[in-house]
Amino acid sequence: MDSTERAAQIALILIAAVLVTAALDLAEAIFAPLTLALVAGVVLSPLSDFWEKRGFSPAFGAMVGLVATLVAVALLAAFFYPLVYRLIEQAPKVWADMQDVIESIREMRKGMAEVGENVAAAVATTDTPTVAAAAPEAAPAAEESVGIPSVTDAILAAPAILSKILIFAGALFFFLLTRSDIYSYVTIRLCPPAGRAALAKRLRRAERNVSRYFLTITVINAGLGVIVGTAFQLLGLPDAMIWGVVTFLVNYVVYLGPAIYIVVLAFVGVAEFDGFMAMAPAVTYVFLNSIEGQFVTPALVGKHLSVNPLLVFLALIFGLWLWGPIGGIVAIPLMLWVLVLIDAIKDREGASALATAA
Image (cartoon, rainbow, N blue to C red; front, side, top):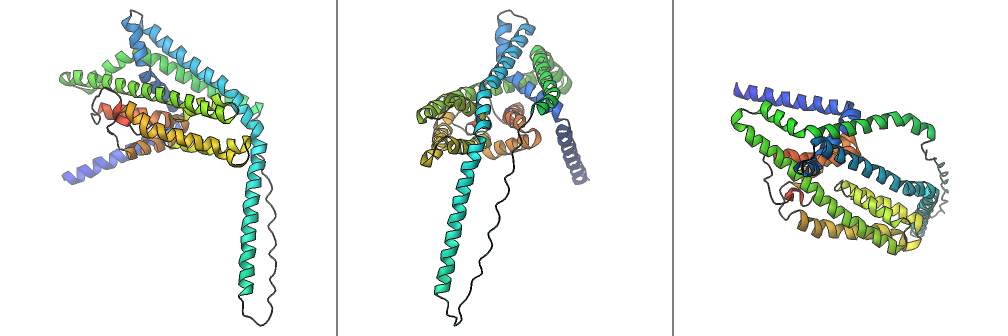
């Protein structure tokens, strides 16, 4: 009977997990910006505490955090506009260069096939001459035009984007404003009086560790962005400092972010340089990112691995599958918050939980 009840409980948990995942997927427009706002609120919690300790009201600290976040997002959007415009301008050249590379590979393969046929004909022992029918060359595929969003598309997408921004801004402000009340409500509802103090301590510890982790990773990513931007400037890559900012951002999405960025840099190198220099941006980034991942991050974030890298990777994949880039951003902080909350990660001087994750 006990085994039957246990199996029934496991089945109910699995069904509930599937239903929750489906609900999160269907309501992505609401839950994705809401979750991002909660993660941002946890990260910005030390800023709110800073103002409250100096006698300012919680509303002031919440407003400062909200304004700082929105200004940072607006500055990034304005900063990236020249880069996006340049990439659109360079798209035809990149496509033409890639077509030349593909055509060279085709010619090389065709030449190797002809050599093979000649060798086979030379060693043939047939009495009658063999007439090889020339295979008709496949007609080159028609180039597919890459559709670029028009002004009409932007206007139609504006309400959805604006609604997500409003959800994010409202959730962030009210979480920063009332997070102490939220923690108190959770401890009262979920724990008996004897365990409320311990749960409140866990919530604060989880918040502190996530904030420390994010701050440390932000400093590391900023340093990597400056170094990569400087290296690209020395290589002569246009908009090198903007690419440094891109480096800073993509490093938040561990594993997959740098992998995709390497491919992007390969296309950028083809667009901007010729010959072996075409691979210089990608190779430079791989070298500098390897140094950061193998030496800098373990030294600053922590030397002891507390979370299995496979768990980090699975959380990232699930977040990207569920909500795309937003899911990739919130997956690691949420995982760290949950693990600290359930005491799977003990409190340390720094956020040493994800030493190999960044």
